[in-house]
Length: 511
Image (tube, rainbow, N blue to C red; front, side, top):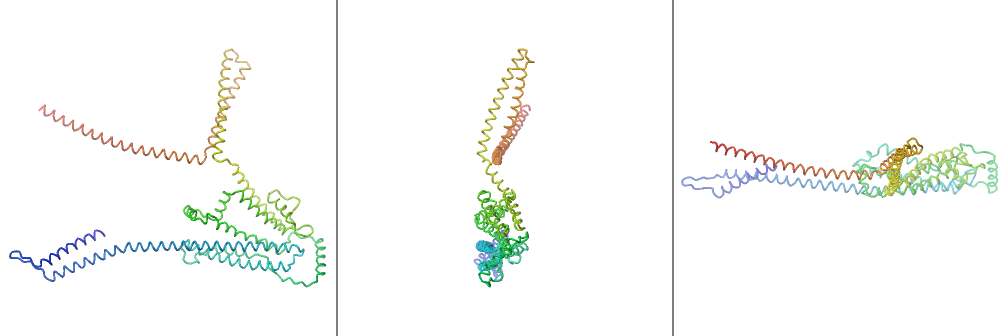
């Protein structure tokens, strides 16, 4: 492009020179010869000039438009990225707000379910009264609101997925996995104790008392089967599954998710900052606190579940303290004590408790092990003390070897090689040698145990620095050797010239 422009400019300058020459000197008298330029030639020159001007202007305009187009495209891309980032931030905030409301509504439903069941537990026949019916109605309303919030949350989640992956149509982002998770959450949140028939007081107060007395008498006679479980309890226990929303709550409110720098580092290193990553960091930073909170929540939920499922000999629900005592046995994997579960539901809760107890025991072992591990500097001090003690023992045994050697030499000189004292000294001599070998082995193992990742990194850093210095020295030596070779070549060339000059002088003298 530049060569074409230069040729065009050169031709344009030549044309201008010709045109100026033609305009100023239309007729030049040279003695008897005149040179004239017709109007046709002048018009052809003017047309050539205009064509060259048009070509240059087109080239200039095209060259000037290219950076403008690039700048415009760059501004458009920056504006698009800023718009997407702003929209992504707003969608993340909306998802966080909706999830917070879901957590509050779900926790409210669980608390109301526990209150309703506790009211129902006061009656042996588990019939609804007005208070429990109203609470069930409130739970149903909160469940409907919660299902709507779940659908609303997934709407914003799919929009966020479209923004992150530059997807224009939202049906493309609605994968089978997301659809399955949404249906699963809706089914999990829809399970709740529903209000049945409205309780109406048909009988008088005396009839109620008589019916209660007969029911208590029948309850003492009829034992509850293993398969029995109240309907409200069967529909209420799955409501504890709504606590999964709090995992999402912890993720959204974590500083790792809210911090832009950590998000950027995660994307660059291909690390997804999700709930598993966040909970690992919390267990790494605060292991005791996290384990205590987890055990408290599990014991509370499991104990109340056992109270709701298990019954006493008089067909009443066991107390909360007895339920805690019954739950701690399988939770600590010790087994049952004086209390045992009386229904299949209680046995299922005990099985889940034992499974979680194994997990908690493993976590507790890991936490205690981490607490008992010495730090880097504590390990240095401990190894230094052990090494100094081993060095003292080695010096002591070396001195013993010298003493026993001198005594053996003395007894040999006294012709007492077969004496018991000589044999004892020889035995102690070999024992000291064996002890020194053991001390050397312990020192070697101690040195190996002292070397960790930090020491390896330090050695690697020092080795890299040394290698860099050697490479620099080698490069300087190469330069010096090249200079020496050049100087030697110059000396060789000078010697050859001197040799040729001497030969010429000798030839002249001989001739």
